[in-house]
Length: 138
Image 1 (cartoon, rainbow, N blue to C red):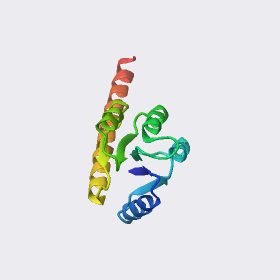
Image 2: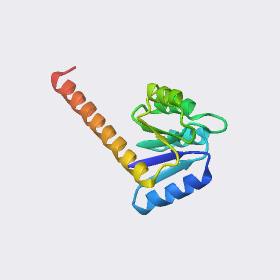
Image 3: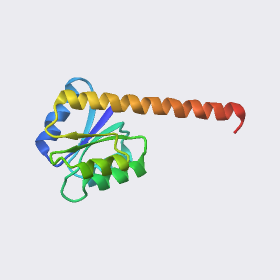
Image 4: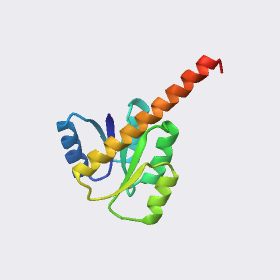
């Protein structure tokens, strides 16, 4: 599993990357939406934790672009400013979940594992459907 954390709070990026790395999870960090999108052009990422409120490109705009790059990426929105409207909009745009900061390492780990499992199951279904189409000659 490879995770990306996108947040303008440097301390959150540093601490979370350090903790995930200690347990063997590969983590990329980006301090802006633009940086995240550049990284996603060249890196395979399974789960993205994405802050909603950032200077420049906000998390909802970044979410739209992530889904254009790769709709299979599981995105979990993060915010310190709980907003029902933002949560609903994020889910409508394809986010898998929504967490309110501060969030514990245990919650981040649990949500990332759930998201990764969802992605693996979806990939298995796609492979199965493709193999059925090949057998039938579709």
